[in-house]
Image (cartoon, rainbow, N blue to C red; front, side):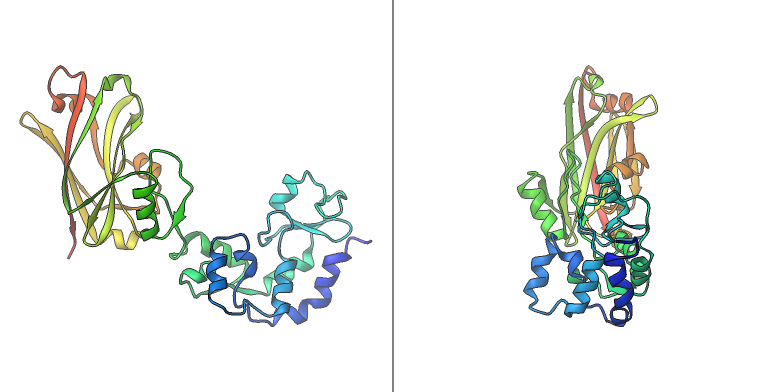
Amino acid sequence: MAPGGGICKDVIESRIAFSGYDMATSSVELRGSPLRKAASGLGGNLGATSTNDVHELLECPVCLNLMYPPIYQCPNGHTVCSICKARVLNSCPTCRNELGNIRCLALEKVAESLELPCKYQILGCNDIFPYYSKLKHEKSCRYRPYSCPYAGAECSVTGDIPYLVMHLKNDHKVDMHDGCTFNHRYVKSNPSEVENATWMLTVFNCFGRQFCLHFEAFHIGMAPVYMAFLRFMGDEDEARQFSYSLEVGGYGRKVIWQGVPRSIRDSHRKVRDSQDGLIIQRNLALFFSGGDRQELKLKVAGRIWKEQ
């Protein structure tokens, strides 16, 4: 069959029929997703048969995601997305023919004419986007799930804030405290032997919202330091409504930090690497700890308040 045959031929013949349809919800986006059950629970029709047909044309047969240019086709007209083209070693996943570099321009053109809802529609986003703008929006959609803020290990869990609070409590055994002021003690024996360390996350319930207190040891250049900082369980615009202070001291000296909590949209590593928090040089931290400087005994006091 000629390169223009198969699926791409069907696309050319069907383009007029498909381009006028109003897309209610992308069933492709929901397939294999935890949001699919929520969509099914709504009891509504996810779209007409023809709408689903055009979704299937745009669905990569390997990863089942919607395809974006460049969309490749084999000589028999079977399509695959550019990412999966490399995964299948340039072999068509449908007929095993060599894929080569043939573009399915007709399918790319059909996609250009479509408008689709955000895949987080089930979570509250009601915006509609041109096909090629949809992906960019979804990367920053305010309704997208949050990532688990736990820093002690890589955790792939995502969800809304109430779900993540329960996840932190039940799965990570994180300490939960009520109140907007706190005194937290960090202890470590032989601290000079520890180059990098992360202490257990602590979550504070304050003003009906949740704040994550992080504390860890790492290096800035060659200098060993400790750092404490606060992250807000919510979006950045909400985080800016709050301020916090942290202080540490002893023997007549004191170091105070005041700032705005960062949203958990920013990863723990991103906040740490930006040095947006209370930073204490190791020598100063051991001085505050007293004794023979062989054990870290650091008390971090803090306060959270809401800006007027």
